[in-house]
Image (cartoon, rainbow, N blue to C red; front, side, top):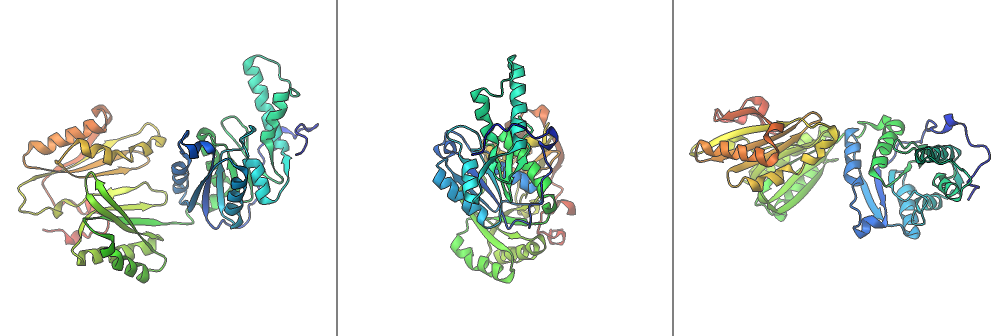
Length: 418
C-alpha cells in the first residue's frame, strides 16, 4: 500500500475530476450488494428496489443482482465474475476503513491492479476531517493516528476515478464499468444517479422495453404452457413469463401471464397471447402495462364485462392524492393488497396507478343496493389514509360503457356492447 500521507496533496480543483470515457457500452447492468449484515438479517437491503427505480427512470433495467458477505475470498470471486463480461456493475458497501471493509482490496485483486492512495480522495478526506474538527471545536491534526488511518478510505485500485459523495464528500470509485459506493443509502443512491447521468447519459432510453400482462383466474400453468411456447416461437425477441399466486385477496388463485421485450414487438405478441386465452375460454382479469421510465399502471376489468342481467349497482371511483415528494411514490405500491382485505366482498376490482405528480386508486365496486358502493368507497378512502389528503375524481354510476379513453390496453372500443 502506498504511503497514506503524501507530502503534496492534489490541488482542490482536482478533487472532483470529470470522468474519462469508460469505453464501449456495457453488455448488461448488474448490482452487487456487499455485507454480512445483509446475509445475517441485521440489516434489510434497500438498494435493489432503489437501483431498479433509478434505472427505470432513465429507460434502463437491471439484468442481474447478487448478494455477498464480507469474506475476502468470496467477495474477490464475485467481483471477478461481475467484471469479466464487461457489464456495468454497481457495488454497494465495504469501502470504509474498518477491519470488516474489504471491497477496495478485493476489487483491486479482482481487477489485477495495485492499491494506491488517490490524491483527490486524500484531499477530500482531509477537508472532511477539518470540518469535523471545526464542528467539535478542536484543532485539526493531520498526523494524529486516527486521521492518518482515515486516509485508507481513499486507497483505491490504481487508475480509479472518483465518484463524488454529496453527503460527506468521502468519495467512491470507478474502474472501467465497476462503480463502488458506500453501503449507506443516503450516500449510495445519489452517487449511483451521478454515475448514470454523468458516465452513461448516452444510454438513457437506449434499451426501451415494455411488459404487458393480464390476470388469468383459476388457470393451471401446465394447461397454458403450449400457448406460451407458441407465442415465444412466433415472436422472436419477446419473452413470456408466468407468475402464479394462490392466495391473492382479490383474484384468489390465478396466474399473472404476460410478455416482455421491445415495445414494437410486445404489442403483437400480447394480442396473440390474449386471443389464445380467449380461445381457451380462460377467465381473464385486469391487464398490467409496464415500461422503462414508467411506474406500473393497472387497468381493471372493464365494467361492460358484467352481465347486463345482473341486478347490481356498479360504481367506478378514482381516488387521487398528490405526494409531497416524488420519492414518496413507492410507498403506495402495496396499497392494493393492503386496502382490499379491509373492504370486504363489496370490492370487485382495485387498481393503483402512480405517476410523478399524483397517485390514483381506482375502485370497481359492485353492490346490491345504492348505498353499498358509496359505503365501500368511503371505507376504502379511510383505509387508504385521512380523507383530507385524498380527493375523489371521475365518479360514475351506471352510464356504461365508458368513453373510448377508458378502454383498457388491448381492448378495442368497437368490442364494447352498445
